[in-house]
Length: 367
Ligand SMILES: Cc1cc2nc3c(=O)[nH]c(=O)nc-3n(C[C@H](O)[C@H](O)[C@H](O)COP(=O)(O)OP(=O)(O)OC[C@H]3O[C@@H](n4cnc5c(N)ncnc54)[C@H](O)[C@@H]3O)c2cc1C
Image 1 (cartoon, rainbow, N blue to C red):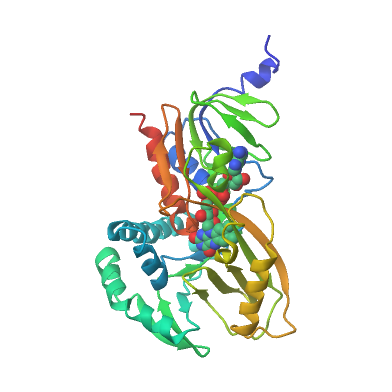
Image 2: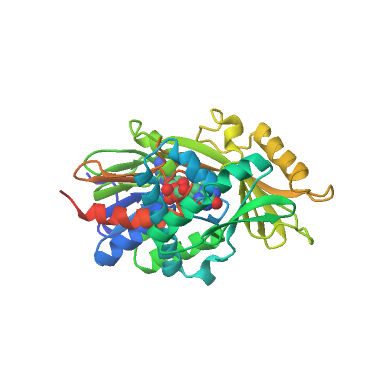
């Protein structure tokens, strides 16, 4: 005997063509693009949070294609081809995001980005690579002279004219608005407990929903659902100061291969990162602030950014990222009913919508 009412079963609970697990930038973008090519499809997006509750609304809002020392560090681990592909993906991904959501809706600022050095030797080493990466950018993106060396607030810097910043909350609100307007359904507070190879998902409330296609876009939480996927959770921390009328840092900045980042948000200072200070401890998917990391960031702000004594931080939060060993996202069809798109490895603003678009194409390709 069926337990749902006849009315529920023949409306709300009709089988879905696509169920997406995770209302982050990837899950929502994939639903948006899938709906464009399948206007009649019944699409449901499930998220465990009251609002998106992973990385997309808890990040730092850097819209960037990568610093010199980040590229150099990647070259020690990866092929040149992989790194070049990622630069193109980031650049084109940002153009796609800005084109679909529009700059004024997402608070996009074309401010450029600075890599800040506190050691002359490290600056000189990085500066030697500038001609090579400028050549790459010209060849790959048609953009000459992307990186230039300069001095700012007494520190040597390398400026990247293509980097920018945005407001992640506004970005996600606009994405949700477009997804809902397109006719997809989003259900919040809906934690997926398990899924099977036939496309069924079971929620924590015991309800099971069948779907023809299932997209797993749960990023840093993926191992809870699919323990064999090679992706590690990585917690990140962000703080935002009280208003600071004479803030001397305007734009986006990164330091130490991108591990520390800071920017102005109006007249406030945002500061975050330093996950590398306690990497093993931060490889977890529970929210929380690590005191060792917080102290490291505060010391950096005081000693290097000359944060005045009377300025205090008003916000501090954490978010959960998903990292793959090579930083390349896991984007593949698992079987007839399931696709996975996850592991954005800390650069989801630039590549998130593009990965979502590719996931929608993969959902179409049933082999
Ligand atoms: C502190 C921090 C700072 C960052 N700064 C930047 C930055 O400046 N620039 C940049 O480009 N990137 C940054 N990132 C990375 C970027 O935010 C991510 O790469 C991107 O948001 C990932 O998007 P996603 O859709 O894959 O995952 P998420 O946004 O994490 O979305 C996954 C969603 O799945 C949901 N979910 C998970 N498991 C389940 C389940 N079992 N049932 C139901 N729902 C589930 C979660 O609630 C979540 O909403 C930062 C990340 C963090 C944490």
